[in-house]
Length: 101
Image (cartoon, rainbow, N blue to C red):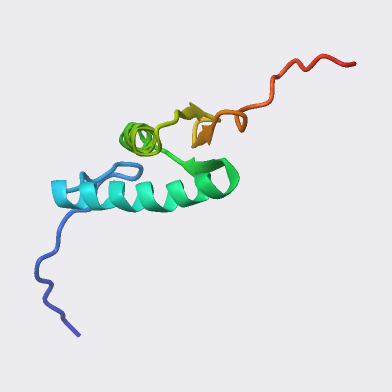
């Protein structure tokens, strides 16, 4: 059986990212602002995956917007190559070299 293929497009290379339109980008940032903001408000911190520089920039922007919205600093740090942590003061990383009592 022969099938005709219409509108076939080459997919980006594995690991490549496709850019979002301006409307899609704004939608993603609004959703992250709402969802991550609710989690941070509830427990003081959230960990979220960020595999690309674009995703990391997006999370930094969300942290700045949350800081402005709440009037208190929302800190952000890379936990590893694949995750970022957004948190309020007092909910950050534990010191690596904790002193024993």
